[in-house]
Image (cartoon, rainbow, N blue to C red; front, side, top):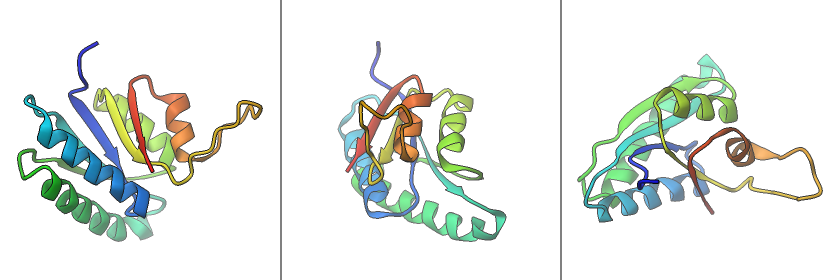
Length: 133
């Protein structure tokens, strides 16, 4: 397996999601072969699309600050259910790495129903997943 080269960073502007954006920027800055990066914000409804556009612009700024402007991320806003939309977008873009914040990360081996967006991604994406908390 090669090092992941097509990254999807999913953020909603929260503390841990922003930490994932910053981490991805630092990681990208250290790599000789720069990845193709897409930053995704998922709006729940069309009414929140403008807020999502502001969040994705702020995420771009955070990423570029950490990446020393060596990587120019593509920005994307979609409307839908976050977990499904993130996993589906990663598949559509043929991403091999998803980076997300993990404030909702909970995993109980005795529970047959994973909870939260990060667990949905873990269950529904075949690739490298970085959950930052």
